[in-house]
Amino acid sequence: MSRLRKVTRTAAGSGIAVLLVLGSVGPAVAGDGSGSSGEPPAGDGGGSSGNGAIGAQVQFKTNFKGGKGASPIAQSEGSWDPPLCWTQPKFTGKQYKEYSEKTAPIDPTSGKPLPGWDKGKEFHEKDKGAWWYRTYDVDRLRSGNVKPADMAKCTPITPVQWVEQGDPPKQAISPLVLAGLAYARTKLPAPPVTLRPAADNQIVNLATHVKFDAPIDPVWVTAHFDHLGVDIAATTVARPVALRVDAGTEFADPQSCTYDLTKSKSGYQLDTSKDGCNIKYRKSSGDGAYQLQARVTWKVTWTNSADPEGPAQQPALPDGLSTFEQDVAVKEIQSINR
Image (cartoon, rainbow, N blue to C red; front, side, top):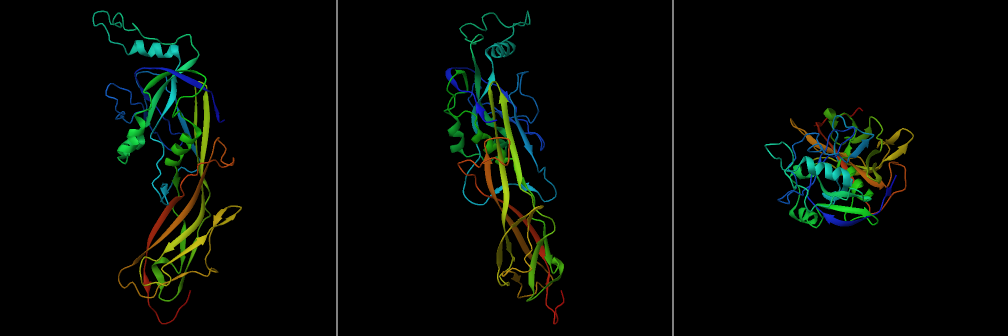
């Protein structure tokens, strides 16, 4: 699945929007930035690849579509960002000429392309290879979190180029690029935490036991690109490894506990009733409540195929986090009954 046909560069031209289709979790768009201004596309949120062009697609598939409390993956630390831009094959020589003719200036009297529209242009109709386009992840552009330094990295990528079979161009779409795109589209479930005593009936000086009301499964997302001889895939896999519980107040001892998650046949499970660390609230919350936070750390790896069980690849991806918060009402009573 991770086959990448080698190609070489020879020429450049103008650009077109490219569609990224997000399989089972909703649409995501990518586009090129090869217009006359050299700027990336604004995007209209539609499902069109632009001007009737033949769309090269990245398909996404996931085993977790989200649910109540689910959220996009958050990095545990660092400032790593998924890829913003790359180059990928779009047209054969014949397709490129057909597209160029469709988008050429029109003679208003005849309704046909103006004579000479193709003068001096080389389409490589009979050559083996493809036209490659600089492509942006428009979802990231729309997020408003793109740094100028990230955009600057896209500038050296040739907007449109003819690539013969041979060596791939620099910054070509690759399994690593796909792994980054899959990472950015990973959603994680909220920790399914149950407290004993119950959250609305916590007791001063009584240990708070934490249990999952259901096991957690690993989450994986596969990104697959197959167009004009480039057939590659990558799968990002997030596995829950630890849970940290924070009391939400200084009036607790300890104020936080961290637990390793245990893998069972049905998933990753937790029950702290026999653990050496359990939060004890030392003061009543009165008429208010403390905000307890439960945060799962996910170890994220990636494979260079559509198989989530394949061997992990390098470089490593950042660990992920998913968080659940709830109010806990703490009472002070003379006798304790669980």
